[in-house]
Length: 310
Image (cartoon, rainbow, N blue to C red; front, side, top):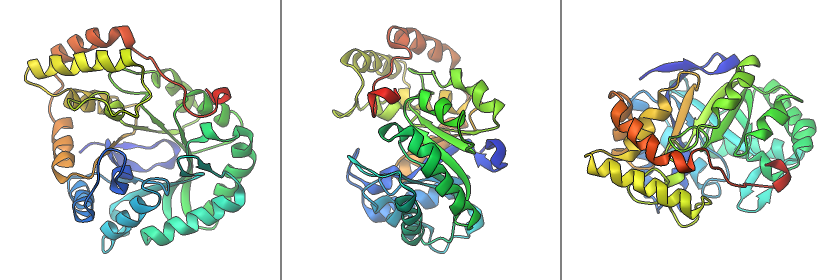
C-alpha cells in the first residue's frame, strides 16, 4: 500500500481509504453486521489506515457498526474521520449547538475519545456563510478541546470549496464523483487547494455506481445519456475481459496529488479485490479506449443541494 501526506495535517494516509457509508446498509444493499465488521478488519489488515464515516450513513448505524468493528483495535492503527451537519435525507443543522452535540454523539457511538478529522458534511445544502461563521468555529473549538485533531469540509459542487476556503481556514476537503473516468473536474481545483496546503480526499471512484458492470442505481442523479455512455464503456471492458470498476479504481488512485481515494463497501471480497486491483499495472490501451467512449459525456455534472451553491 502506498501512503501519501494529507496536506497540512501531516497524516500519512493510505492511497486507498475506507468509506464506511456502506456499513449503514440501505443505499446499495442490505448488509449483515458480521460481514461489515469483517470488511473493516480486512481493510485494516491490508494496509488501509483511514476510515471515513458520518452520522447520516444508515442514520447512525454506520457509526455504530464501525464502533463494534474497531473495538479492541489499537487507536494508532487508523485515522478516523466523521462529520456534522447532515443527519437525514432532508435533515440538516449546521448550528454551533448541534455541531457540538453531534461530535459527542459520534464519539460515543464509535467508542473513541477523539476523531482525527471532523468535517462539515454536504455544505451545499446549508447556508455557506453560516458554515464559515458558525460551523467551522465550533469545529475549531472542538479541536481545541481535544475531540478532533483537524477540521475539514465535504460536498459535491466544487465551487463551495473555493467559497469556503477563501473565507475560513480548513485542513482538508472531501470531494466525491469529481475525480473518476467520467469526471475529472477536481483537477481544476487542485492548484488552489495546494496553495493553501489543504489535504485532498476524493471519494467514489466508480461514480456511485456509474462505472460498474451492475449498472447505475435508479436514484442516481446522472442524466440518461451519461448512464447510457457509461454502460457502453462497461460493456467494452467486459468484451476485453476486464472490469470497468477495476480500471476506474486504478485511474483514481494513480494521481499522487490526491492523498487518498475512499471506496465504500461492506464486502470482505470486494475490499480485498480493490486493494489487489490498485497494486496491478494500469492498462493504458484499455484506458485510452474507455476515455474515447466516455468523451461525449466527459465532465458532465449535476445539481446537488441548493441551486445557489452550485
